[in-house]
Image (tube, rainbow, N blue to C red; front, side, top):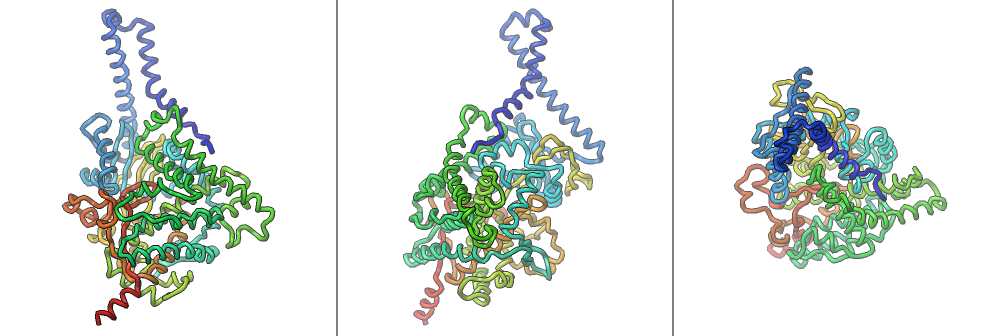
Length: 614
């Protein structure tokens, strides 16, 4: 469905704001013969004069806005954040460095390096003479996320991402956001983590959808079967790929009420033969066109973000997403129409545990675009974010066999076989600690941001001398690298870069825990509604895997395509970069470049091996 946001018009308005005033000024100089005759009679001097006028206007305009902000900040008793100063005008060299780092560096390495170089937690990147705030200060992040009246998604971000997210819950704001969340919240439940007696537990405030576990298990058994087969042939399996298929298949039935997706029925990638991109683009089956279009929409959206304000130049005459959006709609809308046709025939309430999300939506509203956008937003979260969390939990278990052993002991003691209940999941404190530690070090959403509607005073950080930090209005963007904030040693201790679930079981730490230092699901009015869904389903997947497998052996060097493993040069770096055995990259969600190749060890195989040795 076509977007009501006209990015071409927005871009023309931007160009008009840049070029129209100096053009009027130049026209006035010509009209009233202000320029000397010698200048007017020489084409070279005339053109040079025009360029000088343009450059002078732009420089004056930039300087005026900068001085205006500094004066307002001083008047309000605040300070401007540290400003990044590159070697080239407009910090163009810094922009080039950012693009290069994205392609060849560790996840968010560019942001971390620039903050460390300037010895600060809040920095004005000042890309292309435009204020662009970056902060890893937890108090500032929490303030911005909870101040819904003054911070929103921002017009530029909405324009870049609208063809992917539409007007769904992820991009909408204000009263629309409140309405969307009120409608969607009951379906996904309201389990919110809270602190009590030194640990995090689940507080059930909504109905529990036990059917979801039964549905998920049907597909998870396919995953386990494929993993067993690979284990028997001593071959690794790409856990990232299989989790993406799993979440896609489950989402197809849970969200759309259809079992035709069946990505798990297709052959799995073989070691060292494909890349993640190849797996996406070579999808087969009835869902194939949809899967490819869905993937390409995400790729194009990320490309727009990296191109900043100038992306409309590449798409001014042709919107590159149109073909893929139409393909996505041609798959989604028949499911919506089918649900509408069934609405009159259905017995009972579609808001029961047996209903799919599309059934729930068509019973709640007749707005087809609303239903379409919410389905697509939910699919992105259910498929990409959950698959990312599953992937990095298993990565942590594969490189920490002692943690795997302790976790498996808890699983076998609590639920040795069969489906776990919600009560059993809540009892497993170490499992919850493993998930929390994964979310801390490897949050699926590593980066987010908000734009200011009006000027605002942010809380002071460690470099502002207890003075609040001034942020201008007029859609000034402030970026939050959650991944960096959740690895800060001043918040988490000197062992912040290490995977230690025990930190979540240490009563001395948890009793004094600052909740703003852990925000993998956000906070405030836009907090992720799928938080409890993610906790419960991640717990379910781990439990079912550990009922079958004793351990997991990372085989990244044997399985991942060439160029997927971290370069040897990383070993001389600090932090996680020096010890990482996969290459974390940033897309819609955090992912491992080239996949996560693991050989699972079946529990019975371990037992048989022990008997043979004895």
